[in-house]
Length: 297
Length: 297
Image (cartoon, rainbow over all chains, first blue to last red; front, side, top):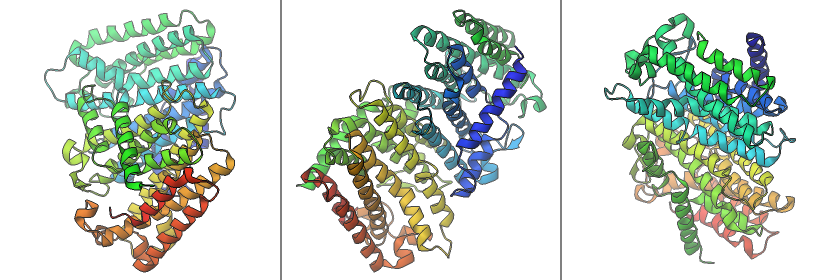
């Protein structure tokens, strides 16, 4: 399959839906909705929503059913970036080459735009006007999966440990594993599990997709750590080498670059192995796993 | 009925459930869970959860069914207080006589504890291990009601307009109404609507409870504005007169104290009138409406 064309097509599909679902700037409060849209449309690659659509397809589902939850996932990812960039957190002025939300709208609106995007995600996932052909119990399961993976035992937990570990000399592999599986891995796992649930997967398919998500999620973050070292500032849209400069807990930092690269490949192999029960309908998931490890930004 | 005893009993019931549902401090990340619990157990009166239980009772439902959503609502209320108190927002050092979350745990953890509480609320409301006797479609409707009322067209929207109006000379009644119906009113309305949905209310009862919630929510916030002027610092647990000092958009500020008091009474009368279709099973809702307007803190 032509992965580049597939990713572009799905990205546009997600963008069109996000534009339809997000409150308009003409709705009160204008500034809040402007801030929400600013960060959602700041050039994201829509990796999580596309993974959700691909997982839905892999289990034989109609991907249209996964569009609202896919957009909800991107809203949660975006809220996490807005809050991570705040002065009290990572204090970043740029994200994907653009000024961060609080640099444009101020800290208060940035905090509230993040809060509103997180809330909007659950509003969208539970919208009674959408997804009426999906059983309500499956929709509830999707909401729960997303909330568990985004919360204190998932993404937020990972961010806390990441922050607390920064600059500490004694960070070991278990801590880096905790950070990566929680901060990035959890939402990626939730994306594919939600896609499988919305596609009507049975237990076997659901378990396979979950194993794929766990391995691909970890591969994604290790690849990110490697890119921070090997990528140029232009390629990755932020200062290259910033992880090392900050004393961030990363795979290359605790095991060295060659071992980190080997680990990323192992994780990709695990992700591929998890998909063995599927036929060509899982080709998008397979190609995305390879792309995750080989990407340049 | 003995309202004081009722409120105390329900408050304990909610507190016990909150303690059961919230992640323990022994779970990783310890500091995050400590921060979440610190603010949840900082002396809240549990007005919203109790309203949800009372609304469930009013429509003839089993109030046990509303316990998880009631706790979810208190988590959302608590997250909003933590974020409102941040330096970038209201910059408050004390809340209910205790140091605010960011004064104890730092800004980063306070932001993340708020994020985690908001997420935890939706996790709880969608938990597959709870509420299995409530139809999944009703649970989805509850989640949607809560998300709509907490988001950019509800509570967060109200907070944005409140913040943007602070200190401005030309604040008029429509703006104050927008702030109050959104910032405080929306969650109170959502609480009673959720309680009615979980209690299995028909359309007529649901509409009545909704009208009650809208009127009681507005009465609650006007009473708060009045308390800020007439209460002592000891009674209200924060600096008395702080709204005026900040140039906050309040009912007394735009219409004067006597007219604001009359408006609070009108709203309470409307709330009572909405309950006319109910018998004694709505007595808790009736008594709470009176308490809201007459309370001293």
